[in-house]
Image (tube, rainbow, N blue to C red; front, side, top):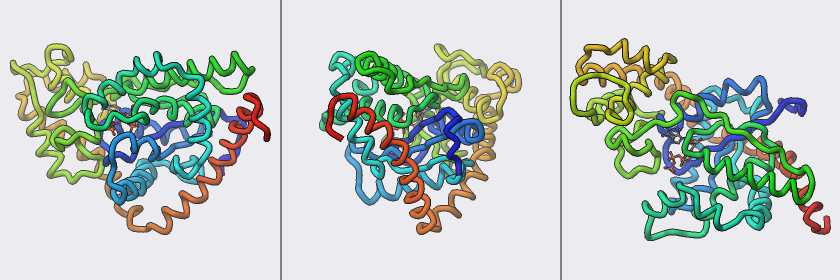
Length: 334
Ligand code: AQP
């Protein structure tokens, strides 16, 4: 078990708000395992965040197990990293309330994800959607996390978490480690296959827009076949004028571990149709071993429950130290 407190901490979370997409994988998840040896890592299934959008309770539960299985199928080891569910650690909600009192409405008003999601869910613009970044700040600060691996879309929220930490530290003395984002250059923003001007999102209502990490190869190939391309016929990386082709080049390069320039060279002179099939099959090859392990893990629910129970305990122990310190500093009787 990793109890080495000398190591710096990493925290990252994914919402079980849908099945995990290629975007989540390339932007965040694939980087998680490589950090396990050098850091004390906490990888959270942030189920509380999902309630900002209406969820089917049975499905939410299923997706939480599914995300845990995917974490492990992608190489996370529950004895080395702490893999846990957010709602199992009550300190997240407790710290979130306190931090909310140190966050300005002006700051939350600027959050682009709130604007995007309010537009998408106009019938349910709830207070949770608005204060989501405060809960995210609590998730991170509770563990004195030094680094937070995220995709580009979460950069603004991470900056807010930093501002809140700095503000609190100024008022009460050094309480929180100020976190830094870890954003990889490649794969940080995977776009929708049908609407390449929008990011690939797991809660998208059009399944043609995303590829799931656990999707069958036939279905993946069909989606790439139908992926939107651009006018012209040249396979060229030019996100502004050729968003569809550039997204596919980015996916291919990230999956293959090469640069977009090299990917571009590889497909110079190729027809769009052939290029799309090559991207699809590279994605299938990358995801196949993960899907196999995932299915095995999902078939043993008792094992998953055991892992969640043990790991929540480890997370609560760390979280309680920060929470107590915060309570003491703001003047609560302990
Ligand atoms: N399209 C993407 N490209 C690269 N990285 C991405 N991430 C999400 N989409 C992309 C990264 O995945 C991690 C987990 O994200 P999340 O579940 O916390 O929420 P999200 O960013 O809102 O992801 P989705 O898929 O768009 O979920 P829904 O549809 O529920 O809102 C984060 O590190 C994120 O940057």
